[in-house]
Image 1 (cartoon, one colour):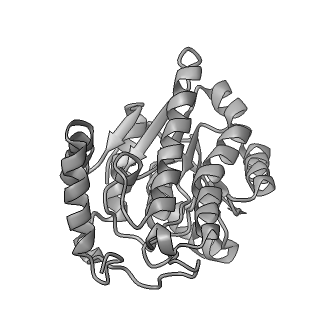
Image 2: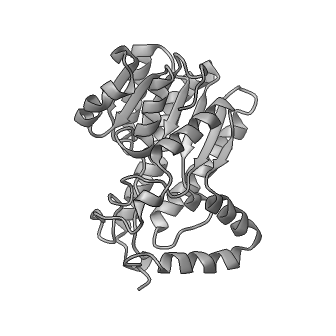
Length: 274
């Protein structure tokens, strides 16, 4: 585990904190001495996990939050400030994926992904922003390589991640002179539950993953990269060699990248192309 005093006593809000990258990040921040606010829909699960976050339970706050609901996001920030009096870092991590061809897709699926991924980021950031400006803090959006180079059969996922990137890049420029740091954080494929929970054409959960999760970057390793990026106040991080190559190829050789991406997705188990 990385060693640093940078996060000691900082108030860090993490959405989607009950599993995956969110939970791994909450654990790491807690071990580094931060005051961690865990936000997710399952309050019981967060409460059961809270002892893993910090030995001092006064340094952990669990808030039941559906980020697609504006009032929930407003209440998350209110409760955070009520308990700790400040916010130093907001990690917008809560997210939902999908897997289906657009021609087969019920449009409610795209609405759902935009509500969770994009609007969840917007709502939480909007209500946290005055406090982040006061602390000269940081806001993070956990996106994906699919937010730089589109992923077929994931129209709702890709468009929501592109939208988050555009929102956060704009926010960074607006507050360039205010001391606010804005980080766009783009992991590659990371071991998590996101593919099991991904929605299919009719909006029901996929219930399985087409990837060998054991061969992917661990959520814990991803959390370490996130912490290092925050400490360095980075504005953008793209993880994994494949991710960096994909983003560069998309910029320089877009038609070739389209072809390679098509071939990659076509090889997935139960590929929607088949």
